[in-house]
Length: 169
Image (tube, rainbow, N blue to C red; front, side, top):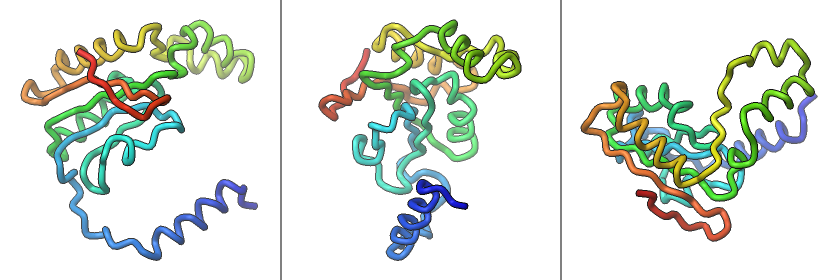
């Protein structure tokens, strides 16, 4: 039996597909850039960052982590021709609210020893300072041998309270 979320997916997709006319877009992004941003449900990357369908790769994960996104970034650049990365973290991010030990304890409490053992040693990549985390991830990408030196990397913060972005230097 389908859940209400699944039913909504089918309904909304049928509405979307009934007027869809973009099936001929090229596989590589037209504007040759990738965005790494958080999975936070309060962020609509297309609207907030001005991304039209087919323009860019949008890579989302908890905390907009460059380390977590490196596989997708390499594919985006090496196989699909992007040459710029916008790394955009956000205010009020959940990754600011815990430490690795906290996450591991929650996993053990909720999923038991087997779940905890499966994730033993996993770095959940939390961070205590938003701007510093942006600078660290930008430095990571700029210093990575897996990212070409010619790739432009910039760091940003999206403010969920105002909808505005600001550069982090």
